[in-house]
Length: 94
Image (cartoon, rainbow, N blue to C red; front, side, top):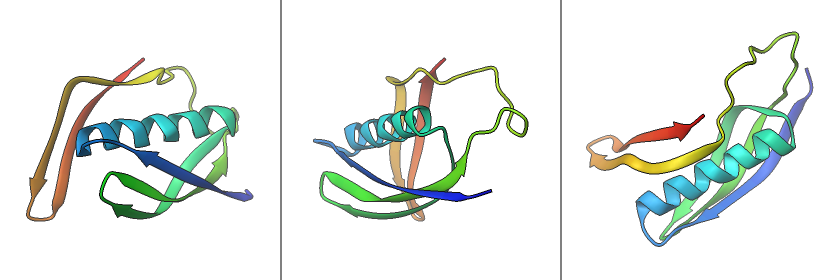
């Protein structure tokens, strides 16, 4: 299948808001462009992340359907810095 590469950008006043906004933007791209994300190339700086997301077009014959993510929730959100980077726990509204 043909690979699609799209630009993605998000901003936030803190790391939790940035994570939610990034995932919301990713959700938007998956819905509008029918994108199945496979890889990312991202640059992060204070309050902002930007880059590209690459993937393939959603195909009902190949990809499972059924449950759709409708939104990203702050409820239950946990973001902690670890020795390896950050650990994010987040709830998706379905």
